[in-house]
Length: 165
Image (tube, rainbow, N blue to C red):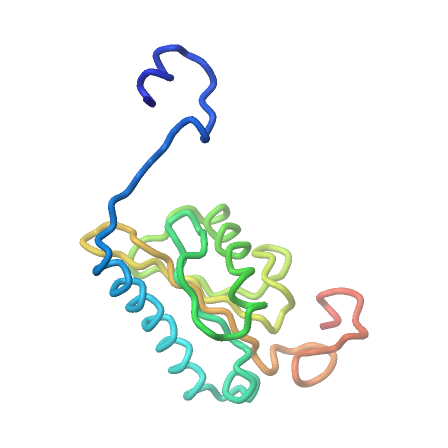
């Protein structure tokens, strides 16, 4: 169908192209549960080893798996305000730096560059390769207790810009 539309040289609408992927009904939940377990273990390891009480006790963190385009693939049961906005810093990092290579790690907290919230919300972003092919990006977002600013604890609601925070 796609080839026929291209031959007609008319504008293709996504609703006109149907892509189907056959999924093994037994393998799909096994793979999905493995993804969720990997993300959950990542969050728990940080939570149990964190020196920040916000991460250790309040679970103010969010790990996730992202597609190579920066879209959310899988997450676990941590704070939604870190997880469900993870596409924004992911896509901004990819837009600024391009495709990351094996061994690259991006650690950022600048709310203007990667648009990740406020300064104490740190984002760690790594590529995950399998046989030299980029399959996922791992992202971890967490609230660091003290990233500097006007008051200790990294939270000052009375500030009017990121320098005061």
